[in-house]
Image (cartoon, rainbow, N blue to C red; front, side):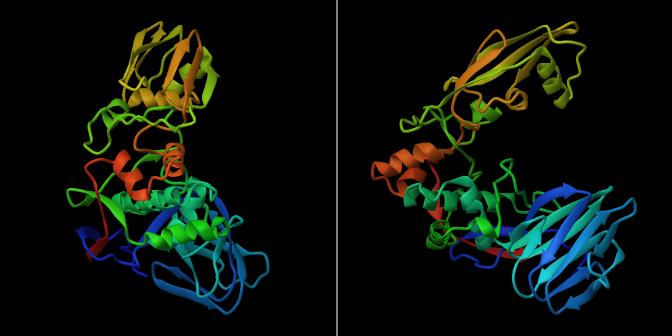
Length: 370
């Protein structure tokens, strides 16, 4: 196990696809974790193999002020005490369980400034089998599941090497990843039936963003994030369920949301929507304070509204109450909208072409270099 484990240089080339592509998923940042191995396994540090174990074992991993400490409930442990700032748990058989959730691949634990970063290293196609159940229900039309598999694969490729230590997180901030026990036969079949397929634009995997419910119309990237992307355009979304919601906020909550953005104010006196985009999403917000008006534009306005607990930015404001529709940022494929299109007979190819114009459905291969 080499210390220089940061992702290799990856170059996308359209053509045949590579089956064994490792992906690194940040599961959590914590100070204490329980790690269980179901069968024979080995433990590794920067310096090499620490131990090999013939059967199952459970370890407790602690963050200290100088690195990682390892212990177990049934001494003697195969590895015990201080191990430095990295330890990997590598199953020979079975899964690795982290705080009660099982995963394929292996677990790498990295110490960073008093925290443990729990990182699951797993092959791409295996990873996707744990992503799809967290993103779309198995009851959705199969064409939607296939479209989602292609988008999740594409999004993953676009994020490779985005951090020296990991590629994605396991939450909705990246893609929801639920691990081995969440896998279903239908989701897994969708991954396998689309194996290696991605959406590309000008020879690169696209930024394959997606969301739950557009509220009736998707938004262009420029409206939500302030920069145009040719394949992320506004689209009518007639089969979106357009679920409505209401969120009442307080001046104190607005003040705290501003503080999360690094905008400290002494008090909040008023809140106003200053502008909306073509789809009706809020693009500019004004906050009245004793120090003067704070004006937030996209994409900062979107982060502010999410910090206030709004499901989407497709909303109006009356007093201190937001009323809106939809769920998510509103860019790219609407999962519920895609469900409606599939129920009208649309194929996964047609669904992807509709939500991501100017893109090409293709396969990939990767060449890696240090």
